[in-house]
Image (cartoon, rainbow, N blue to C red; front, side):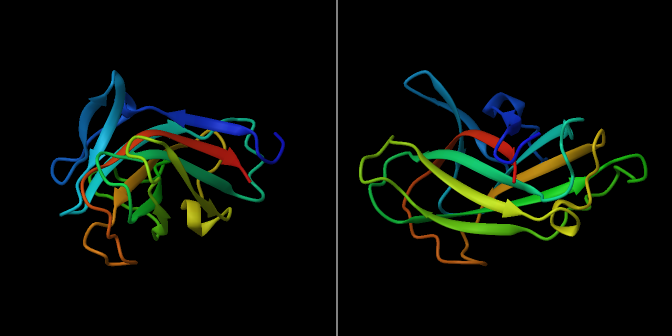
Length: 166
């Protein structure tokens, strides 16, 4: 695999919502999205197997394709974390690596997509996920401003998540 090549793509329907504080499934002009509220942190979970063609040396970059439900200004803070399931994790409890976050400014026109990107180094930042192992990806909106100021009013709509080889 070459740097920049796509490893995985997640659609809103691939979300495995947690029991509470989850992003809600919605549509925008027949485009399926996950709505992340501006008032409370909400989460989406995606499961996959790390593809065999992942080199496992430099890491990955996660690209979040999103739009604002109604806002035309402000920043949305996205948080992303990996959880290695592999063959040793007891799946009765979560075990996510430390989150990485990015603040991304919404477009001046509601509904126009932005792409926020977060780079993860191979190893601890991706919870040491190895080729052929199951993992989960947690995507959250930091509405409460724990990591940075999220000042975009209204929902942030997640259209798609792409993971590329870095």
